[in-house]
Image (cartoon, rainbow, N blue to C red; front, side, top):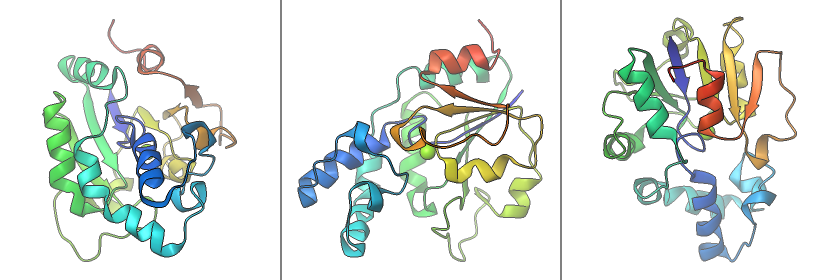
Length: 199
Ligand SMILES: [Mg+2]
């Protein structure tokens, strides 16, 4: 089996960390459950300058992100059983070292890490074998995808049999699912069951 797995808010608790940071920097007290927008600027009602400042803290924030319970255990199990796992993130490529280090520290040395510009943040002219251009990405196939962002669902349209496991987050609760292959999951235990993986 081939797995597409998103990084932020699937493997780790990025939204919660940004909520803490927005409170510290700007006094914006938005509880996690009230983060109704995928875009942090909208969720925290930030100015452009505040939003830029918030994202400027991304590199230091990433190193310390809490793992989403069960993520590394389930993924390690899949890899150990011979499945192919690609972590495909929409983070800017400047976060590569920090992101790779986070995976390695969480026992995911054998998970591939790729960068795909999912949200139009841009990776400029940077060249790397870890950056997927749209053509590269759309040549890949997957059996399962784990994703939290409705803005990324368009990356699944070319795979009619793909099962998409949507990690439940406040910002995706109002999103309609494009078809019956989508299923909301509340934990990695549930993802593991739905992916028909080992055990
Ligand atoms: Mg995400």
